[in-house]
Image (cartoon, rainbow, N blue to C red):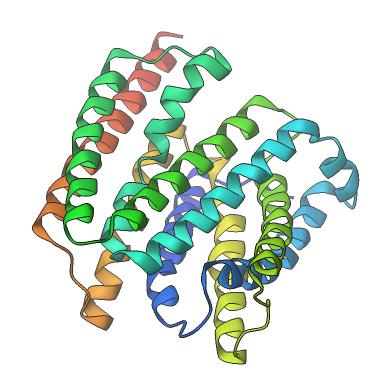
Length: 297
């Protein structure tokens, strides 16, 4: 496979962010399916796309690659089940702005958890960012409780924590990459969703329109978006990836405002601004620090 250039990598990561930013808008188009039904059908659309990506990248040895993921693959899959289910419920239970702002805290959760899990020290600038982000999260959660959307805000934070667990598992195990981890997460999501629905006395069967929308979201938005991100991320430094990831956060509320007229409260935007400032500042500092290190080396 031909190596991806830096410019092409930037384009692929930006495209992934644009695709992922459509998630909230698409969720709003689903009429009857609940969280677990959406999770099942969205994963059913995503899994074949990721299987194709794995087949291309592994040279046909896709099952050997998945088998070698071991316990890290299991943790990554469990983390993505929480991330996917939490994100869907949050987008259904609160505003897209609330859900997406809180979900963006995943990068800072990862920085905190990397300290005990990967023995990576948290830099002073990151502690400042975490403190600022915590204030933003407090403002948003308090606002959510005031308007009766507290459970949606909590689900968004659970989603962020789940994605952090997935990220740490991928970083810890060299045998596990993003595509493999997301593929395993998709399979696990289908299984867990089916079990939960069965336990609740519900069925995976939903109106054909809802199922098709969810599957298209899984295949095109999540699956193709992940393929673009995975390819592009190999040519783009981590600090720049964090900054480019904010494209999703900034665009998602704009789509539902422009097309559906959905707005959010002043508290949501105030807390979101603090959270985005923390993430942006930390990403810029990391990029500058790595750049200086590269020059000195």
